[in-house]
Amino acid sequence: MADPTMSPPNQSQLNVAASTTQRRQHHLNLESLAPSPSSSEHVNRLINSNHYISPSRPIYSDRFIPCRSSSNFALFNISLPSPSATAGSSPGDGGKEDNPNAYAALLRNALFGPQTPDKKDWGAGAGGRNIFRYKTETRQSMHSLSPFGFDGLSGPGVSNVAIKAPRKVSRSPYKVLDAPALHDDFYLNLVDWSSHNVLAVGLGTCVYLWNACSSKVTKLCDLGNDDGVCSVGWAHRGTHLAVGTSNGKVQIWDASRCKRIRIMEGHRLRVGALAWSSSMLSSGSRDKSILQRDIRAQEDFVSKLSGHKSEVCGLKWSYDNRELASGGNDNRLFVWNQHSTQPVLKYCEHTAAVKAIAWSPHLHGLLASGGGTADRCIRFWNTTTNSHLSCMDTGSQVCNLVWSKNVNELVSTHGYSQNQIIVWRYPTMSKLATLTGHTYRVLYLAISPDGQTIVTGAGDETLRFWNVFPSPKSQVIVFIECKIKDRKVSRNTESEIGASSLGRTTIR
Image 1 (cartoon, helix red, strand yellow):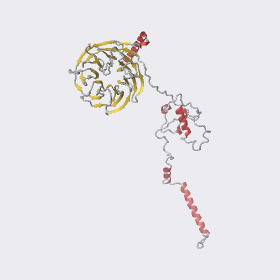
Image 2 (cartoon, rainbow, N blue to C red):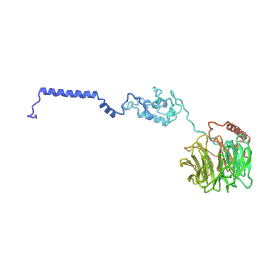
Image 3 (cartoon, rainbow, N blue to C red):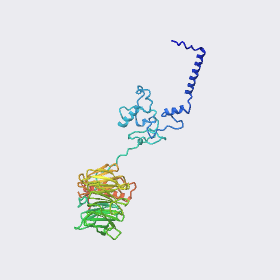
Image 4 (cartoon, helix red, strand yellow):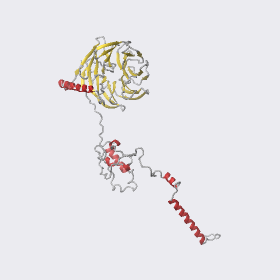
Protein backbone atom coordinates (compact mmCIF):
# COMPACT_ATOMS: atom_id res chain seq x y z
CA MET A 1 0.00 0.00 0.00
CA ALA A 2 1.40 3.41 -0.90
CA ASP A 3 2.12 5.95 1.74
CA PRO A 4 -0.45 8.68 1.41
CA THR A 5 1.89 11.23 2.87
CA MET A 6 4.44 10.87 0.04
CA SER A 7 3.77 12.39 -3.36
CA PRO A 8 4.82 10.46 -6.49
CA PRO A 9 7.91 11.83 -8.31
CA ASN A 10 7.34 13.87 -11.40
CA GLN A 11 8.88 13.18 -14.81
CA SER A 12 11.71 15.74 -14.49
CA GLN A 13 12.96 14.18 -11.30
CA LEU A 14 13.08 10.71 -12.91
CA ASN A 15 15.10 12.02 -15.85
CA VAL A 16 17.67 13.65 -13.55
CA ALA A 17 18.14 10.38 -11.53
CA ALA A 18 18.60 8.30 -14.67
CA SER A 19 21.21 10.71 -16.02
CA THR A 20 23.15 10.59 -12.77
CA THR A 21 23.16 6.76 -12.73
CA GLN A 22 24.49 6.58 -16.31
CA ARG A 23 27.34 8.98 -15.52
CA ARG A 24 28.39 6.85 -12.49
CA GLN A 25 28.37 3.64 -14.54
CA HIS A 26 30.38 5.26 -17.32
CA HIS A 27 32.94 6.52 -14.79
CA LEU A 28 33.37 3.02 -13.33
CA ASN A 29 33.89 1.52 -16.78
CA LEU A 30 36.61 4.06 -17.55
CA GLU A 31 38.38 3.21 -14.31
CA SER A 32 38.33 -0.50 -15.09
CA LEU A 33 39.60 0.06 -18.64
CA ALA A 34 42.36 2.52 -17.72
CA PRO A 35 43.88 1.51 -14.34
CA SER A 36 46.17 3.86 -12.52
CA PRO A 37 49.81 2.73 -12.65
CA SER A 38 50.35 3.79 -9.09
CA SER A 39 47.54 1.76 -7.58
CA SER A 40 45.89 -0.88 -9.73
CA GLU A 41 49.00 -2.13 -11.47
CA HIS A 42 50.85 -2.38 -8.18
CA VAL A 43 47.99 -4.34 -6.66
CA ASN A 44 47.85 -6.64 -9.66
CA ARG A 45 51.56 -7.32 -9.39
CA LEU A 46 51.18 -8.28 -5.78
CA ILE A 47 48.18 -10.50 -6.44
CA ASN A 48 49.57 -12.11 -9.60
CA SER A 49 53.26 -11.97 -8.71
CA ASN A 50 53.82 -15.55 -9.85
CA HIS A 51 52.55 -14.78 -13.34
CA TYR A 52 54.08 -11.33 -13.82
CA ILE A 53 56.68 -11.24 -16.60
CA SER A 54 59.21 -8.48 -16.71
CA PRO A 55 59.66 -7.21 -20.30
CA SER A 56 63.38 -6.45 -19.75
CA ARG A 57 64.46 -9.70 -18.12
CA PRO A 58 64.81 -13.14 -19.84
CA ILE A 59 63.17 -16.20 -18.33
CA TYR A 60 65.60 -18.61 -16.68
CA SER A 61 65.13 -21.69 -14.56
CA ASP A 62 66.02 -21.11 -10.94
CA ARG A 63 68.90 -23.05 -9.30
CA PHE A 64 69.20 -25.69 -12.04
CA ILE A 65 65.61 -26.86 -11.52
CA PRO A 66 64.56 -28.77 -14.67
CA CYS A 67 62.11 -26.97 -16.92
CA ARG A 68 60.10 -29.50 -18.91
CA SER A 69 58.87 -26.85 -21.34
CA SER A 70 62.42 -26.71 -22.78
CA SER A 71 63.17 -30.41 -22.36
CA ASN A 72 64.21 -32.65 -25.21
CA PHE A 73 62.76 -35.99 -24.20
CA ALA A 74 63.75 -37.59 -27.49
CA LEU A 75 67.33 -37.76 -26.28
CA PHE A 76 66.19 -40.27 -23.65
CA ASN A 77 63.86 -42.22 -26.00
CA ILE A 78 60.91 -41.26 -23.82
CA SER A 79 57.52 -41.83 -25.37
CA LEU A 80 54.90 -39.22 -24.64
CA PRO A 81 51.19 -40.05 -24.87
CA SER A 82 49.58 -39.49 -28.24
CA PRO A 83 46.98 -36.75 -28.68
CA SER A 84 44.25 -39.37 -28.75
CA ALA A 85 45.37 -40.68 -25.40
CA THR A 86 45.18 -37.26 -23.84
CA ALA A 87 41.90 -36.32 -25.43
CA GLY A 88 39.96 -37.60 -22.47
CA SER A 89 41.96 -35.56 -20.00
CA SER A 90 40.96 -32.17 -18.80
CA PRO A 91 41.71 -29.28 -21.14
CA GLY A 92 44.00 -27.69 -18.58
CA ASP A 93 46.34 -30.69 -18.28
CA GLY A 94 47.53 -31.24 -21.83
CA GLY A 95 49.51 -28.06 -22.25
CA LYS A 96 51.06 -27.76 -18.82
CA GLU A 97 54.72 -28.53 -18.20
CA ASP A 98 53.82 -30.53 -15.10
CA ASN A 99 51.84 -33.07 -17.06
CA PRO A 100 51.83 -36.29 -14.97
CA ASN A 101 52.04 -38.41 -18.13
CA ALA A 102 55.42 -36.94 -19.08
CA TYR A 103 56.72 -37.47 -15.55
CA ALA A 104 55.47 -41.07 -15.55
CA ALA A 105 57.20 -41.74 -18.86
CA LEU A 106 60.45 -40.25 -17.55
CA LEU A 107 60.26 -42.28 -14.35
CA ARG A 108 59.47 -45.50 -16.23
CA ASN A 109 62.34 -44.96 -18.61
CA ALA A 110 64.77 -44.21 -15.77
CA LEU A 111 63.78 -47.29 -13.76
CA PHE A 112 63.33 -49.88 -16.51
CA GLY A 113 65.54 -48.56 -19.30
CA PRO A 114 64.75 -47.15 -22.70
CA GLN A 115 63.35 -50.43 -24.06
CA THR A 116 60.02 -50.64 -22.28
CA PRO A 117 56.85 -52.37 -23.49
CA ASP A 118 55.04 -49.03 -23.71
CA LYS A 119 57.65 -47.35 -25.90
CA LYS A 120 56.22 -45.25 -28.72
CA ASP A 121 57.80 -43.13 -31.39
CA TRP A 122 57.97 -39.46 -30.54
CA GLY A 123 60.21 -36.53 -31.21
CA ALA A 124 59.33 -35.24 -34.67
CA GLY A 125 60.02 -31.72 -33.50
CA ALA A 126 62.56 -32.52 -30.85
CA GLY A 127 65.19 -30.11 -32.04
CA GLY A 128 68.57 -29.84 -30.37
CA ARG A 129 67.72 -28.10 -27.12
CA ASN A 130 69.22 -29.09 -23.80
CA ILE A 131 67.24 -30.95 -21.18
CA PHE A 132 68.48 -28.54 -18.51
CA ARG A 133 68.65 -24.81 -19.04
CA TYR A 134 70.35 -22.23 -16.87
CA LYS A 135 71.22 -18.86 -18.38
CA THR A 136 73.36 -20.07 -21.29
CA GLU A 137 72.93 -23.01 -23.63
CA THR A 138 75.42 -25.83 -23.22
CA ARG A 139 76.75 -28.50 -25.55
CA GLN A 140 77.56 -30.86 -22.71
CA SER A 141 76.62 -34.49 -23.17
CA MET A 142 73.31 -35.56 -21.70
CA HIS A 143 75.02 -38.55 -20.07
CA SER A 144 76.99 -36.23 -17.82
CA LEU A 145 73.83 -34.37 -16.82
CA SER A 146 71.63 -37.38 -16.21
CA PRO A 147 72.09 -39.54 -13.12
CA PHE A 148 71.27 -42.58 -15.25
CA GLY A 149 73.65 -44.08 -17.78
CA PHE A 150 72.00 -45.26 -20.99
CA ASP A 151 73.76 -47.16 -23.74
CA GLY A 152 73.27 -46.47 -27.39
CA LEU A 153 71.79 -43.00 -27.00
CA SER A 154 72.91 -40.36 -29.42
CA GLY A 155 71.54 -37.16 -30.80
CA PRO A 156 72.54 -33.94 -32.49
CA GLY A 157 75.55 -32.52 -30.68
CA VAL A 158 75.56 -35.35 -28.13
CA SER A 159 78.51 -37.74 -27.92
CA ASN A 160 78.36 -41.16 -26.31
CA VAL A 161 80.44 -41.18 -23.12
CA ALA A 162 81.57 -44.58 -21.90
CA ILE A 163 80.94 -45.27 -18.24
CA LYS A 164 84.24 -45.86 -16.43
CA ALA A 165 84.40 -49.43 -15.23
CA PRO A 166 85.86 -50.25 -11.81
CA ARG A 167 89.58 -50.91 -11.88
CA LYS A 168 90.41 -54.60 -12.01
CA VAL A 169 93.00 -56.00 -9.62
CA SER A 170 94.66 -59.31 -10.38
CA ARG A 171 93.65 -61.93 -7.80
CA SER A 172 96.86 -63.94 -8.12
CA PRO A 173 100.49 -62.97 -7.43
CA TYR A 174 102.77 -62.58 -10.42
CA LYS A 175 105.76 -63.91 -8.45
CA VAL A 176 106.26 -66.17 -5.44
CA LEU A 177 109.56 -66.51 -3.58
CA ASP A 178 110.41 -69.10 -0.97
CA ALA A 179 111.61 -67.51 2.27
CA PRO A 180 112.82 -70.22 4.64
CA ALA A 181 112.96 -69.32 8.34
CA LEU A 182 110.66 -66.29 7.92
CA HIS A 183 109.32 -65.97 11.48
CA ASP A 184 105.62 -66.16 12.25
CA ASP A 185 105.81 -63.37 14.86
CA PHE A 186 103.27 -60.54 14.90
CA TYR A 187 105.64 -58.09 16.65
CA LEU A 188 108.49 -58.24 14.11
CA ASN A 189 109.06 -56.22 10.92
CA LEU A 190 111.25 -58.29 8.62
CA VAL A 191 110.53 -56.96 5.10
CA ASP A 192 111.27 -53.55 3.55
CA TRP A 193 111.62 -52.24 -0.03
CA SER A 194 114.18 -49.55 -0.83
CA SER A 195 113.96 -46.59 -3.18
CA HIS A 196 116.62 -48.35 -5.31
CA ASN A 197 114.21 -51.26 -5.91
CA VAL A 198 115.99 -53.68 -3.57
CA LEU A 199 114.02 -55.84 -1.14
CA ALA A 200 115.53 -56.59 2.28
CA VAL A 201 114.29 -59.68 4.13
CA GLY A 202 115.29 -60.96 7.56
CA LEU A 203 115.41 -64.76 7.66
CA GLY A 204 116.44 -66.21 11.00
CA THR A 205 119.87 -64.80 11.81
CA CYS A 206 120.55 -63.51 8.27
CA VAL A 207 119.52 -60.58 6.09
CA TYR A 208 119.13 -61.10 2.35
CA LEU A 209 118.81 -58.53 -0.43
CA TRP A 210 116.76 -59.28 -3.53
CA ASN A 211 117.20 -56.96 -6.51
CA ALA A 212 113.83 -56.50 -8.22
CA CYS A 213 115.48 -55.51 -11.53
CA SER A 214 117.85 -58.42 -11.91
CA SER A 215 116.29 -60.94 -9.45
CA LYS A 216 119.77 -61.28 -7.94
CA VAL A 217 119.94 -62.45 -4.31
CA THR A 218 122.71 -61.19 -2.02
CA LYS A 219 123.40 -62.26 1.55
CA LEU A 220 124.09 -59.08 3.47
CA CYS A 221 124.95 -60.42 6.94
CA ASP A 222 124.71 -63.28 9.40
CA LEU A 223 124.32 -62.33 13.06
CA GLY A 224 125.34 -65.75 14.39
CA ASN A 225 123.65 -68.27 16.61
CA ASP A 226 123.49 -65.94 19.64
CA ASP A 227 121.49 -63.24 17.87
CA GLY A 228 118.62 -62.86 15.44
CA VAL A 229 117.05 -60.38 13.05
CA CYS A 230 113.94 -58.68 14.44
CA SER A 231 113.48 -55.73 12.07
CA VAL A 232 114.90 -54.15 8.91
CA GLY A 233 114.46 -50.62 7.60
CA TRP A 234 115.87 -48.77 4.58
CA ALA A 235 116.99 -45.15 4.74
CA HIS A 236 115.19 -42.85 2.31
CA ARG A 237 118.15 -42.70 -0.08
CA GLY A 238 118.12 -46.48 -0.35
CA THR A 239 121.81 -47.14 0.31
CA HIS A 240 121.87 -47.73 4.08
CA LEU A 241 119.93 -50.44 5.88
CA ALA A 242 119.20 -50.56 9.60
CA VAL A 243 118.93 -53.97 11.25
CA GLY A 244 117.33 -54.44 14.67
CA THR A 245 118.52 -57.46 16.59
CA SER A 246 117.21 -59.66 19.37
CA ASN A 247 120.04 -58.47 21.65
CA GLY A 248 118.76 -54.89 21.63
CA LYS A 249 121.31 -53.49 19.17
CA VAL A 250 120.83 -51.61 15.91
CA GLN A 251 123.31 -52.19 13.11
CA ILE A 252 123.77 -49.81 10.15
CA TRP A 253 124.90 -51.41 6.88
CA ASP A 254 126.06 -49.95 3.58
CA ALA A 255 124.14 -52.18 1.18
CA SER A 256 126.10 -51.13 -1.89
CA ARG A 257 129.35 -52.41 -0.33
CA CYS A 258 127.78 -55.05 1.95
CA LYS A 259 129.71 -53.49 4.83
CA ARG A 260 128.64 -52.76 8.39
CA ILE A 261 129.46 -49.17 9.30
CA ARG A 262 128.08 -48.86 12.83
CA ILE A 263 126.53 -50.63 15.82
CA MET A 264 124.24 -48.67 18.15
CA GLU A 265 123.21 -49.76 21.61
CA GLY A 266 120.71 -48.45 24.14
CA HIS A 267 117.89 -51.02 24.28
CA ARG A 268 117.85 -53.84 26.79
CA LEU A 269 115.57 -56.15 24.77
CA ARG A 270 114.85 -56.93 21.13
CA VAL A 271 114.31 -54.13 18.60
CA GLY A 272 111.19 -54.96 16.60
CA ALA A 273 110.40 -51.61 14.94
CA LEU A 274 112.49 -49.12 12.93
CA ALA A 275 111.62 -45.86 11.17
CA TRP A 276 113.83 -43.40 9.28
CA SER A 277 113.49 -39.62 9.07
CA SER A 278 116.29 -38.21 6.94
CA SER A 279 119.43 -38.82 9.04
CA MET A 280 117.37 -39.65 12.14
CA LEU A 281 116.54 -43.25 13.00
CA SER A 282 113.85 -44.23 15.52
CA SER A 283 113.94 -47.67 17.12
CA GLY A 284 111.20 -49.31 19.20
CA SER A 285 111.90 -52.15 21.59
CA ARG A 286 110.31 -54.70 23.86
CA ASP A 287 111.75 -52.64 26.74
CA LYS A 288 108.81 -50.20 26.06
CA SER A 289 111.05 -47.33 24.94
CA ILE A 290 111.72 -45.49 21.68
CA LEU A 291 115.22 -44.18 21.01
CA GLN A 292 115.96 -41.32 18.62
CA ARG A 293 119.32 -41.80 16.92
CA ASP A 294 121.30 -39.41 14.74
CA ILE A 295 123.70 -41.47 12.67
CA ARG A 296 125.89 -38.36 12.24
CA ALA A 297 126.41 -38.02 16.00
CA GLN A 298 128.84 -40.03 18.07
CA GLU A 299 126.26 -40.89 20.73
CA ASP A 300 124.18 -44.04 20.30
CA PHE A 301 120.98 -42.03 20.77
CA VAL A 302 120.10 -38.37 21.28
CA SER A 303 116.77 -38.76 23.11
CA LYS A 304 114.54 -41.37 24.69
CA LEU A 305 110.73 -41.39 24.29
CA SER A 306 108.76 -42.91 27.13
CA GLY A 307 105.04 -43.55 27.27
CA HIS A 308 104.20 -47.09 26.19
CA LYS A 309 103.49 -49.68 28.87
CA SER A 310 104.38 -52.67 26.72
CA GLU A 311 106.46 -53.61 23.65
CA VAL A 312 106.63 -51.06 20.83
CA CYS A 313 105.76 -52.93 17.64
CA GLY A 314 104.87 -50.15 15.16
CA LEU A 315 106.73 -46.98 14.13
CA LYS A 316 106.11 -44.60 11.22
CA TRP A 317 107.28 -41.06 10.45
CA SER A 318 104.93 -38.75 8.56
CA TYR A 319 105.88 -37.75 5.01
CA ASP A 320 106.91 -34.26 6.13
CA ASN A 321 109.09 -35.80 8.92
CA ARG A 322 107.35 -33.72 11.57
CA GLU A 323 105.35 -36.38 13.41
CA LEU A 324 106.18 -39.89 14.58
CA ALA A 325 103.39 -42.40 15.21
CA SER A 326 104.03 -45.37 17.48
CA GLY A 327 101.91 -48.38 18.33
CA GLY A 328 102.39 -50.84 21.14
CA ASN A 329 101.20 -54.04 22.69
CA ASP A 330 99.48 -51.86 25.30
CA ASN A 331 96.74 -51.11 22.70
CA ARG A 332 97.90 -47.49 22.50
CA LEU A 333 98.64 -45.25 19.54
CA PHE A 334 100.86 -42.25 20.29
CA VAL A 335 101.96 -39.31 18.17
CA TRP A 336 105.22 -37.47 18.90
CA ASN A 337 106.78 -34.38 17.38
CA GLN A 338 110.44 -33.85 16.53
CA HIS A 339 111.44 -32.51 19.94
CA SER A 340 109.05 -34.12 22.43
CA THR A 341 109.97 -36.85 24.88
CA GLN A 342 106.33 -37.37 25.84
CA PRO A 343 103.50 -38.10 23.36
CA VAL A 344 101.64 -35.02 22.17
CA LEU A 345 98.61 -37.10 21.13
CA LYS A 346 97.28 -40.27 22.71
CA TYR A 347 94.65 -42.55 21.17
CA CYS A 348 93.27 -45.37 23.28
CA GLU A 349 90.33 -46.62 21.21
CA HIS A 350 91.99 -49.84 20.02
CA THR A 351 91.38 -52.96 22.09
CA ALA A 352 94.40 -54.95 20.89
CA ALA A 353 98.04 -54.41 19.94
CA VAL A 354 98.64 -51.67 17.37
CA LYS A 355 101.27 -52.71 14.84
CA ALA A 356 99.70 -51.50 11.58
CA ILE A 357 100.38 -47.76 11.13
CA ALA A 358 100.34 -45.70 7.90
CA TRP A 359 100.41 -41.98 7.12
CA SER A 360 98.50 -40.73 4.10
CA PRO A 361 100.68 -39.21 1.37
CA HIS A 362 97.65 -37.33 0.03
CA LEU A 363 96.33 -35.45 3.06
CA HIS A 364 98.46 -33.86 5.77
CA GLY A 365 97.77 -35.25 9.24
CA LEU A 366 95.70 -38.23 8.10
CA LEU A 367 96.80 -41.34 10.01
CA ALA A 368 95.51 -44.92 9.74
CA SER A 369 96.03 -47.60 12.39
CA GLY A 370 94.97 -51.22 12.76
CA GLY A 371 94.39 -53.39 15.81
CA GLY A 372 95.13 -57.02 16.56
CA THR A 373 92.93 -60.07 16.96
CA ALA A 374 90.69 -58.68 19.71
CA ASP A 375 90.18 -55.39 17.85
CA ARG A 376 90.16 -56.15 14.09
CA CYS A 377 89.48 -52.50 13.24
CA ILE A 378 91.13 -49.93 10.99
CA ARG A 379 90.77 -46.45 12.45
CA PHE A 380 91.48 -43.09 10.86
CA TRP A 381 92.69 -40.03 12.74
CA ASN A 382 93.28 -36.39 11.96
CA THR A 383 96.34 -35.42 13.96
CA THR A 384 95.98 -31.77 12.94
CA THR A 385 92.60 -31.44 14.67
CA ASN A 386 93.17 -34.32 17.12
CA SER A 387 89.99 -36.08 16.03
CA HIS A 388 88.88 -39.65 15.37
CA LEU A 389 87.49 -39.73 11.83
CA SER A 390 86.11 -43.22 11.24
CA CYS A 391 86.38 -46.91 12.06
CA MET A 392 86.10 -50.01 9.86
CA ASP A 393 85.70 -53.49 11.33
CA THR A 394 87.63 -55.82 9.02
CA GLY A 395 86.65 -59.06 10.74
CA SER A 396 90.20 -60.26 11.30
CA GLN A 397 93.54 -59.29 12.84
CA VAL A 398 95.08 -56.23 11.13
CA CYS A 399 98.81 -56.84 10.65
CA ASN A 400 99.94 -54.10 8.25
CA LEU A 401 98.75 -50.99 6.42
CA VAL A 402 100.21 -49.06 3.51
CA TRP A 403 98.85 -46.16 1.45
CA SER A 404 99.17 -45.95 -2.30
CA LYS A 405 101.26 -43.04 -3.51
CA ASN A 406 99.46 -42.95 -6.87
CA VAL A 407 95.78 -43.06 -5.87
CA ASN A 408 93.80 -42.49 -2.69
CA GLU A 409 93.69 -46.15 -1.73
CA LEU A 410 95.32 -48.36 0.87
CA VAL A 411 96.12 -52.02 1.46
CA SER A 412 95.71 -53.98 4.66
CA THR A 413 97.04 -57.45 5.44
CA HIS A 414 95.33 -59.71 7.93
CA GLY A 415 95.93 -62.66 10.20
CA TYR A 416 93.47 -64.61 12.30
CA SER A 417 91.30 -65.83 10.94
CA GLN A 418 91.15 -65.15 7.21
CA ASN A 419 94.81 -64.45 6.24
CA GLN A 420 93.74 -62.16 3.40
CA ILE A 421 94.93 -58.98 1.71
CA ILE A 422 92.37 -56.23 1.07
CA VAL A 423 92.59 -53.22 -1.23
CA TRP A 424 90.41 -50.35 0.03
CA ARG A 425 89.23 -47.16 -1.61
CA TYR A 426 89.40 -44.19 0.74
CA PRO A 427 87.36 -42.49 2.19
CA THR A 428 84.40 -44.73 1.33
CA MET A 429 86.35 -47.81 2.52
CA SER A 430 84.79 -49.91 -0.20
CA LYS A 431 86.68 -53.07 -1.09
CA LEU A 432 88.34 -53.07 -4.50
CA ALA A 433 89.81 -56.55 -4.13
CA THR A 434 90.38 -59.32 -1.63
CA LEU A 435 93.52 -61.35 -2.30
CA THR A 436 94.14 -64.77 -0.84
CA GLY A 437 96.89 -67.35 -1.16
CA HIS A 438 98.86 -67.25 2.09
CA THR A 439 98.10 -70.10 4.45
CA TYR A 440 99.44 -68.29 7.53
CA ARG A 441 99.02 -64.78 8.91
CA VAL A 442 100.14 -62.10 6.44
CA LEU A 443 102.51 -60.42 8.89
CA TYR A 444 104.80 -58.50 6.52
CA LEU A 445 104.09 -55.89 3.87
CA ALA A 446 106.14 -53.51 1.73
CA ILE A 447 105.43 -51.40 -1.36
CA SER A 448 107.63 -50.93 -4.41
CA PRO A 449 109.20 -47.52 -5.10
CA ASP A 450 106.97 -46.95 -8.15
CA GLY A 451 103.89 -47.51 -5.99
CA GLN A 452 102.32 -50.24 -8.13
CA THR A 453 103.45 -53.49 -6.51
CA ILE A 454 103.25 -54.80 -2.98
CA VAL A 455 105.07 -57.76 -1.47
CA THR A 456 103.57 -59.76 1.37
CA GLY A 457 105.21 -62.26 3.68
CA ALA A 458 103.71 -64.84 5.99
CA GLY A 459 104.57 -67.66 8.34
CA ASP A 460 104.08 -70.07 5.42
CA GLU A 461 107.64 -68.96 4.48
CA THR A 462 106.67 -67.35 1.17
CA LEU A 463 106.90 -63.87 -0.30
CA ARG A 464 104.19 -63.01 -2.82
CA PHE A 465 104.23 -60.09 -5.24
CA TRP A 466 100.95 -58.45 -6.29
CA ASN A 467 100.11 -55.72 -8.78
CA VAL A 468 97.40 -53.80 -6.94
CA PHE A 469 97.81 -50.08 -7.72
CA PRO A 470 97.80 -48.19 -11.02
CA SER A 471 100.93 -46.62 -12.41
CA PRO A 472 101.80 -43.05 -11.49
CA LYS A 473 101.36 -40.23 -13.99
CA SER A 474 105.12 -39.96 -14.45
CA GLN A 475 107.36 -42.95 -13.84
CA VAL A 476 111.09 -43.29 -13.70
CA ILE A 477 112.19 -45.21 -16.77
CA VAL A 478 114.48 -47.51 -14.82
CA PHE A 479 111.55 -48.87 -12.84
CA ILE A 480 109.62 -49.65 -16.03
CA GLU A 481 112.60 -51.45 -17.50
CA CYS A 482 113.14 -53.39 -14.28
CA LYS A 483 109.47 -54.37 -14.15
CA ILE A 484 109.51 -55.66 -17.74
CA LYS A 485 112.75 -57.55 -17.18
CA ASP A 486 111.46 -58.98 -13.92
CA ARG A 487 108.29 -60.29 -15.56
CA LYS A 488 110.29 -61.89 -18.36
CA VAL A 489 112.45 -63.68 -15.81
CA SER A 490 109.32 -64.77 -13.94
CA ARG A 491 107.71 -66.17 -17.10
CA ASN A 492 110.87 -68.04 -18.03
CA THR A 493 111.03 -69.56 -14.56
CA GLU A 494 107.37 -70.61 -14.75
CA SER A 495 107.91 -72.35 -18.08
CA GLU A 496 110.92 -74.20 -16.74
CA ILE A 497 109.51 -75.29 -13.39
CA GLY A 498 105.89 -75.77 -14.42
CA ALA A 499 102.57 -74.07 -13.87
CA SER A 500 101.92 -75.86 -10.59
CA SER A 501 104.76 -74.08 -8.78
CA LEU A 502 103.82 -70.53 -9.97
CA GLY A 503 107.45 -69.89 -10.83
CA ARG A 504 108.50 -70.20 -7.21
CA THR A 505 112.15 -69.59 -6.46
CA THR A 506 114.11 -69.41 -3.23
CA ILE A 507 115.37 -66.12 -1.93
CA ARG A 508 118.53 -67.76 -0.59
